[in-house]
Length: 138
Image (cartoon, rainbow, N blue to C red; front, top):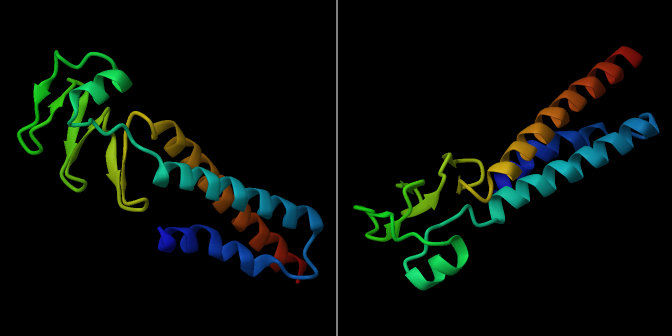
């Protein structure tokens, strides 16, 4: 995760020069904060792992008696869950295993993942705009 933080956030700090417009500094700080928060929510939240203890699973996710037994981890999982071979667990509504977060993106993290994609895209566009303004001004 540290590498991802450095790659996503690090380049912005090169543009905090004394002669930079205050509005751009504020926009960069807001962008850094929003990108960091959304990435942290994706990377540190439970993606919807299916628990092996059926009582815990039923309490948290409702009835899973209609599910199937996973051949890899031997846990009863609901029909909308898939096994992640990278993590070694079944995840509800598994979208993919994200190499940037080192975790699965599933039922509980997909919304934060889309928020992160939006903010990182806006952050990159803002960095591009700051580059353009900086080089045109010189």
